[in-house]
Length: 533
Image (cartoon, rainbow, N blue to C red; front, side, top):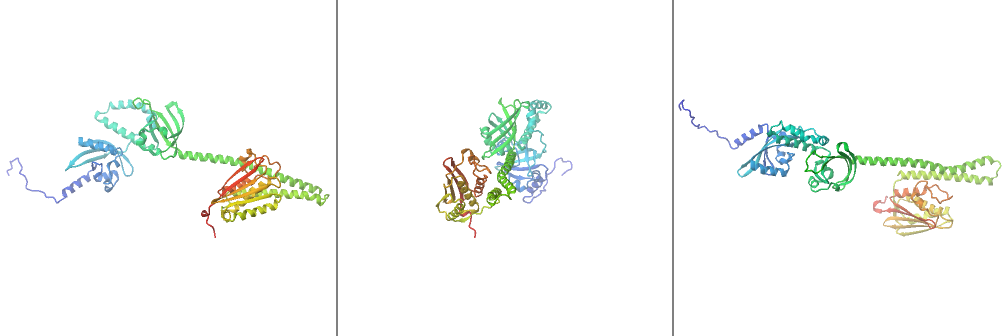
C-alpha cells in the first residue's frame, strides 16, 4: 500500500468473543453509570435494574425484580401506567417528573426518561431516572386557604419571566409538591361541594374507614355525621367545628377542625366549595368524659360522706341520750332508790349500749361488703334445711309471730354462698316482722330452678309509701310512715350490697294497706363452681 493512497485497506484482523462476553460488557457498562436505569414490561413489572437503581431506592436487586414500578412511583397508579404505556407506544419516548419512595420511606422528586422498545415481538420500556432532591414547598393548609386569592396574580407575574418551554414543568412540579403535602399530612382533608365530597386525602380514608372511591362516588357526608357544633369566625371566612362521626365499621369518633370557604380561590365552575381540615380527638373526649365522671363521683362521695356523718351522729344521739339520762339519775339517787326502781334505768343503759353496738356492727359489715372484702365462695347446701334453721332461730326471739315456709323445686342441693345468703334472709325476715302487727303471718317461699334460686319474703305490714321506694336501699334511709318503730336504716342497704356481690337481682312490690313482698334472685350454676374436697 502506497503512502500516497488516501484510502485504507480493510483489516483482516477480527476479535473473536467467547459466548456471552459481549452481554457481560454491556452489563458492566450499565452498572457503572451514575443514573438509575431499569427495564420494565407492559404490565409495569421490573425486568432489569442496574446498581444505581438499587442504591437510589435502597432495595436489593432481588426485591426490585419482584416489584412493579408503581410500588416505587408515588404518583403512578396502575390505571395511569396503562394510559402512559399506550402513549409511549405511540410516541416511543416520554419525559416527566414524578415522586419516588425509597425502602426507608424517603420521598424524592425524580426526572424520568422512558423509551419504548420492541425486540423480536417482545415489548418493554427502558427508563432512566435522576434524583432531583426532596425539597418540597413549605405550605400549610391554612396558608393555602388564607393566601389562595393571591395565587393567580402571583402565578401570572412569575409566568412573565419564565420561558414558555418551562411552564409545563413548573406547573407539574407545583402540583406534585402540593399533592404530596395533602397526602402526607396527618390531618384529614375533605373538599366538599354542597354535601358531596370532591377530594379526600389518605388520612380521611383511614379516619372514616371508607376508600377514596367510595367517598368520591356520590357519597353524602351527612350519612357519617351524627352531631356537629359550630362556632363562626367571620373574620377569616371560616368556622370552628366539633363533629361526631360514625365510621364504616360502626365506631363513633370525635373530630375537631376548621371549615373554610374557598370562594374565588379556586374555580369550581361557579359552585361553592368548602375545605374541612380535621383531627381526631376521640381519645381526648374519652379522657374528658372519664374525668367528668370521676369528678361527679367525687362530689357525690363527698356529699354522701357528709350525709353519712350527720346520720351516724343522729343514730348515736338517741341511745347515748338514754344512757346519759339514766346514768345521771342513778348517780343522783343511787343511795335513795331501792333495787326495783334502779333496775329499769340499768335496763335502759343496757339497751342503749346494744343499739350502739348493733349500729357499729352493721356499719362495719356494710363497709366490708361494699369494699368487696367478702370473697364469693359458693358451695352445695340443702337450702330447705338452711331456711328452716334460720326460721327456728328467728322465732325464738319473736315467738308472737308466725313464719310460713314453702319450697318448690329441687332445693336440697343448690350452689350458693351461705355466708352472704344468711344475712340477706335474716334482714328481710326481721323487717317483715318488725313492720307487721303482732300475731300476723310472714311468708318465706324458695323456688329452686336450674341455674337460679328465688327467695320471696311477704308480709302484711304497714308497707312502703310509693314516694319512699326509690330511696329504699340508701344507707340510713327510713320510710316516712315508720312512726316510732326502732331501727337505723342499714338493713336493706346490706341486703342490696350482698345480693350484688352474689351476682343476683332484687325487686320489691309494696302497697300501703296490703303489705310488702321482697324477691331476691340468686344464680346457682353447679358447673361454674366445682365442689371443693
